[in-house]
Each structure stands twice: as structure tokens, then as C-alpha cells.
Length: 248
Image 1 (cartoon, rainbow, N blue to C red):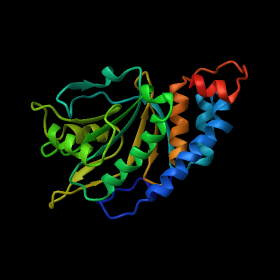
Image 2: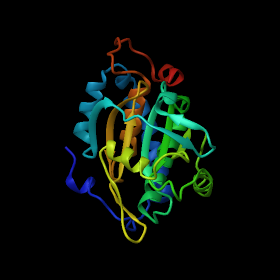
Image 3: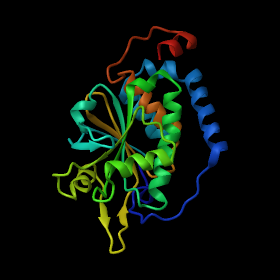
């Protein structure tokens, strides 16, 4: 069950980040999880992983339905649609680059998660997707600059905006299809919720992680389950943690 405060709209208000100490603490926690729990997760169904996270992560919400389709433009000018990303687990969120605080913090949180994911073989199985809700300002060039200014790893991170012939509100309508609104205000800001969406390799929207207070380790746990196709129960052949890490 998620709390109301975790999904309420916000107007880019200031917040603080945990810094490098918190990042390394989280990264170590992921390694601990790998050694202690990953082999078990690999042999359990996704329903069991959902139940585990439902018990320990109050900002986790199971969805399980087809993800809203889209056809947009990447920061390098390529046409990108959901079907192009089949075969990859997607971690998707919505921002706009002129948002002064909340959106950058959301991006920073996903950058921490990307660093955890990319330190494992999951890097080739996962794509991070950022979609702007202010495409009239957030051109491909602006999105490239946004990623570069934050030192983001674009090897498996896409930044998407509308194509020139699409209506200006295309991505805000897409955000609404994902269950939350970005509403423009008179001063150019946007009222919006903060949600991270997880989509499986077949294009099914599997879960939401609400707000910025969820434990990143829990999202990495869920991503690992999706990359290992645990939606179908595996046999319970035991493997050592060394061989599991080699296969992972």
C-alpha cells in the first residue's frame, strides 16, 4: 500500500541529496543483496518477488498491464518507439529540464541506480528512459546538454522529446496514460507527481516506484527479477553465489 503523500503533485520544491556517502552505502547494500538473496530471487516467481517488495517497500506498486505506446525522438535525432525497446527492461520517468529541483533529484536518483545496474552484466539488459514533458523547450540539443551537464551515462540511457510534427502536449498526455499529470502553471513551471515506471522485456508495465524515498536497492531487486524472466518459475537447482554472479 502506498501513502497518499508519496504520489501527490509537487511544484519543483527544494530537497536535499544524500551525496557520495549515501551512494556508496547503497552500492554496498546491492552487493550484500547479491551475495545473500539473489540466488533465491532467481528461483522464485515474479509474484513472489512482488509480494516480498510489497512487504518491505511502501512506495512500490504492482501494475502488470501493457505499457502505453509511444513514438518520440531521441536526443540524437532518432525516432524511438516502445517496440524498438523490446527485449530490454525499461526504467522510465518523466521530467522537464527547467524544473529547478525535484526533476534533477529524480534524475540523480536514477543515475545512482544506473551505476548499480551498470556495475553488473545487467547493463546490457536494461535501458533507462527519460521523457520530457516540455518538448517546446527541451529539444534534442537541450536534452543532450542536460545529460552532459550531469555526467550521465548515455550508453544505456535514452532522453526523448517529441518529433517536430507532434502536438506540444504529446508527452504530457503520455505521462497521463502512465497515471500522473504534468500541469502547466502561469510561471512556466509544472505541477506533477514523481513516479519511476518499470517495464518488462515484453513491453508490459510491471510496477511503479513512487516519490524519491523508495530504497534504490528494492528497485534494483525488481529489475534483476525482470532481467531473469522470473515471471515463469524456475527449477530450484542450487548454484553457488560465484557461479550465479558469473551468469548474472
